[in-house]
Image 1 (tube, rainbow, N blue to C red):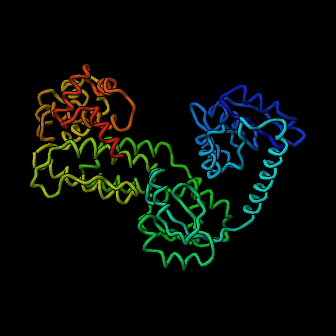
Image 2: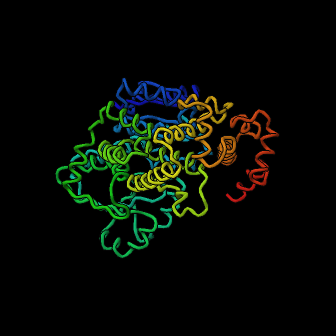
Image 3: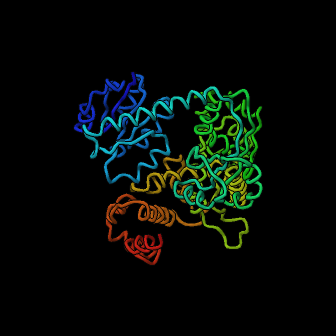
Length: 463
């Protein structure tokens, strides 16, 4: 008997599906129902489910998000998508990420249910046979392309630019496996074109590992591995290295070790002390924390620190460019440059290590509390300095007054909200610490030459 779960936020849809036919005669038993993704995940933690009938558009967690979560935690579960007639543009994406079929809710009735269920059962059987075959097949190696774009839009664009002479199997949105005969020969001919848009990864065959295990690692662990790899455009993974990588897949970084790394990260001693830098650098590569933690760190230091400091026009080393966030080695190089610049600035201004660390923490506090009523007294207290000494050091370090820095941070935050949210001008003014939205608009115009509404319109037109 096939255990099934229906997940839909509409109770009538769930009940209608269950009462549509005698599912038992097809060998399907609906053992539960859920109104959203959270309930579905809770159900799966306690019951064995073979197939889920999942609505695409649900609150809290949509069908795509639920499918991805289930694939990570319960890879044996299959999916049938429940959709409305106007949602066909979503169906293709659902099938790409693992759904075996779909049902149009508005068209399913007692007259066509037999045909629909028979089709679903056939695909369940075929998929089960394929998985059994894969589980008995050793990995035969492969050539892969890792698209250089990091967003969904980037990945789509990069994929469209790849040579049409190659065919691909999509492992993830960014990772494609090249299929067909003479793959390596074709790749060599197209290498120059390919490397503009993707990195090449060749993995040797491994008669110690099943194909299904390697594919699971490619879906769940490869991007993390590649982030810390020391190569960029071309990577070769040998049989021995692949075996080691899959053996380490279940290793868990001790919670205490990662906590200590995080604590050291936000103390910033590694940015100012050469010995601390070398130790933190080694530890990072050793424990390999979630890449997003390092990406966020570099982004914050750039937007909150580098873009805020006043640089001299004749300073050849500054300001630093936007960091390349694609791999650890590039973030590492950027952080080292920032470290050297901060040490030089500290020496030139005769400021102590502790004072510079206080300045970094102060600017981060201001950024995180940008919607609050900020003043130097409160921030000096937060970083453990007297108000007068804080004011003096702040202006020396950043090159401009506290008020100018605060205004800069608020305007930069407003720009992001104008472009990336649907908040009204009044709501944005409140979120960045302005009580009067008219005063905010005048300040914005003084700084950028246009009112907030004009800024938003101009940039939407460019898009």
